[in-house]
Image (cartoon, rainbow, N blue to C red):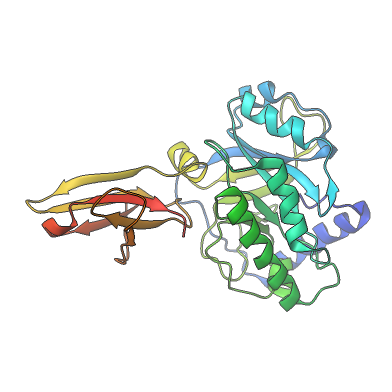
Length: 305
């Protein structure tokens, strides 16, 4: 994504700045994947017409398509959004965020393009890589307004795409750690992360990849997890409730259920749901709570706050 802003030459310069700053100001030791990873791509109008069936056949499991650069619409988005789904891939949408433009108006462009996200739709991505002449405080404030609008309009907690060389100096905030990170870091074994994050969901590791079905260079990405993890991030996650001893239960759900809270109710109706405040532990890459009294044998759900 670093080579596709409205101003092409600014994008090239910024891409170099982000990469060099990332390498010079950070330790070269990055955060490596937890285990299994999955390949994917991200595209825009600059990739022109794409044969998504061929892309899927080449082994790519997911793709992100650009909706717009701020208020400047990407004319290939509709075709890409439909084509990714038709090819059986997990799909996502991203917006190149312009901090100098109204954040709510930008978010509404995305919501109009995607609507409420459905099965196999990844959370929308905020692509943060330019300042628009704004201060770090203004950028962070406008980003939060965009995130609030997107979450309400799509039903999912958005992802943030950025590079540490940009984020740490130009946004300078650790307030977005609840949003999954898409780390941009090329030419390294494992990515370094922007301030505020300790792990990454996606990693853009190249801007010059070659994939069958796409003409010319394309950004290459990895997802940090298995297919079940990717599908959990791309849909409301599964919740598993199993017996635990004689009077307890184990409640487990994917660690990629970002933004969801565990709630319980005694009556299984639309009211009387309360949050379970226990802090989950991580067991085999799953969030897990052990509830130890018969009073906890009621109904459970994962819900966005």
